[in-house]
Amino acid sequence: RKEVEQDPGPFNVPEGATVAFNCTYSNSASQSFFWYRQDCRKEPKLLMSVYSSGNEDGRFTAQLNRASQYISLLIRDSKLSDSATYLCVVKEGNTPLVFGKGTRLSVIA
Amino acid sequence: EPEVTQTPSHQVTQMGQEVILRCVPISNHLYFYWYRQILGQKVEFLVSFYNNEISEKSEIFDDQFSVERPDGSNFTLKIRSTKLEDSAMYFCASSVSRTTGTGNQPQHFGDGTRLSIL
Image: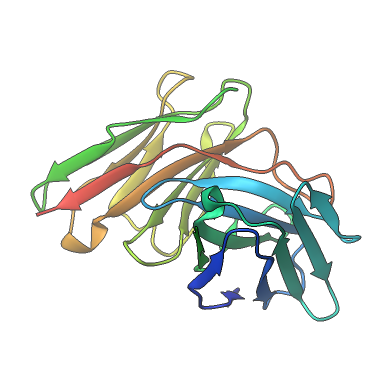
């Protein structure tokens, strides 16, 4: 069975803090990796794709470790607007997206 | 920015009734998907659709479910005889091509239809 496991959360952090989320996936054939963000009762929205060499988009940095089947997301200088659930998502070739249950982040003023 | 749109935003239906959930994918996209999310649980894949036929479906997508693209624009999900456990958010998604390797193209989601079965 293909599973994606994430930190349980919730993470409650002050504004300006740095926070990291972890994710592991069970299917070693997974080829594509994403972080999506989901606000309460809203649709998942793509935050960033995750590339083998790691990648950065502003305050967000994603890392992939294929050997350990591990993905991470680092958020620097947290903003109130970063409060959401962060979904780790993997995909094997042409198969559908497999979602983790998500980690909830609350950034507090 | 183009969007995936879904209607209705909320559907309340009696158990045993048929429901049709509608989606308009992004216009130049070729692949269409339905997912569902039961309250408090993870997003789950239901079905994918390409070239006017189902390309993959999950074990959730049983004989009570069907999909159609009747007019080249709308993409619908029909549940023939709803059960209480069908209550969930249903998300439509589309992508230009299937995500493969590093040439991945993410799926874009509509804002969902909340289905409540009474």
